[in-house]
Structures are given as structure tokens and as C-alpha cells.
Image 1 (cartoon, helix red, strand yellow):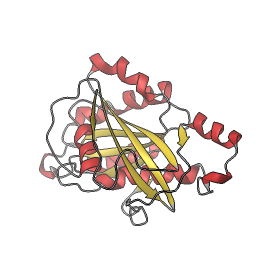
Image 2: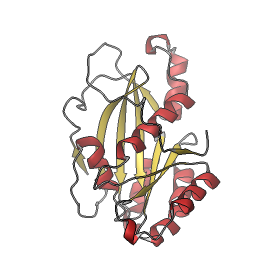
Image 3: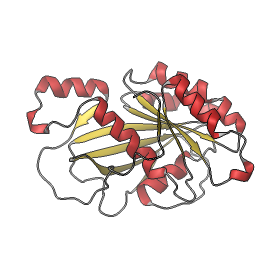
Length: 232
């Protein structure tokens, strides 16, 4: 297992009101690790195939709340699939990733989605991420096909490029924002009862330390553009 440090100003020990665990799933080579690195470090580095699990985190701002996104990048090879499934538990968000230049990765989406439904939280929200949209000349899966799959299965949808950074941040932030809104987390954390906290934990959301902190974080107010939202 390897970890990556978040960007300066968004370190993993920052204070936060809520913690969302995300998983990133899909075939090997679709760019899951590159998406994670782009979001947490704003870097692009073609990586070798993930062996086991990789991890990254980032503190963002949703409305007036600080939310820590804890992202677990699972290996896409079949030999590691049983290990990866163990990390589905407790996840409230899922990035289901395919490569628009490899049709086989699109055809395998249903298998990955079945895994998430079978082994994950019943409240998990999923965004379908069509990666490598910078390689338009090599496209094998149309945007319309991706949108149709998302609509059929009640998923959010975005096209991204980990290489250029196009809509990578939006993919994570829009997923986090939709989870935040669906669970009505706008209340002050200090007003939550023990029963409220327990219920949130059952849904895959942890309540963070309750002491104040001044941080630099990202805003999601302008991140809703160009998003297909099929289940809200």
C-alpha cells in the first residue's frame, strides 16, 4: 500500500467536520492512480500498474463545511479484485472509471458496479468517470454512450483528462457535494446528537474533530457546470 501527500494547504492532518471515504474502481490502466495524483497533488505522472491499494486525501469546502475526502485507489487486475473488495466497505462515494479509448473497459463497467453494490455501502453514491478525453482521435466510446449508461444506472457522469487536469477536480468535488446534500449535512456539527453521529457512520460518513481551525480549501460553488446528474 502506498500513500500520496495532498497539496500544500490541504494536508492530511487538517481539521474537518466530516470525512467521506471514496473508492476508485475500474479496469487496470484506465487512469485511476493518475486521477488521484492530479486531484491531491495537481500533478500528472504516468504510473505503473497499481499493486494492491493506493491512498490519498484532500480537505475541501462544501458550502461552509470542511470535508475530508479519503480516496482509496483499488487495483484493477483480476488477481487483486478480492483484496480490493475489502476496501469497498464503509465507502460513501465511488468513482467508476473507464478509458474512452478502450471499449473493453466500458464493457466491463457493469461487473465493477455489481461489485460495488454487492460489497459496498447501500448508500454509496457513484460517479461514472470517462477518462482520457484528451485522446479524442482514439475515442472508442462516445459521450452519449457514457451518459446513457449513467442514466440507466442512476449515476453521475463526467468526462475527464488526468493528463491535462480537465474536470478532474470537478469529479471528486461534485460527488462530494451530492453526498453532502443527500445526507443534509449543512447543520452545525455541534448540534449533532450521538444518535445522529451513529447513523452517519452507518452510512459511511465520519464526524471529525470539533475544534476550530483556519484552513485554505477549495470551493465547490462553481464546480457544478457540465455535469450530468442522473439520480438527483
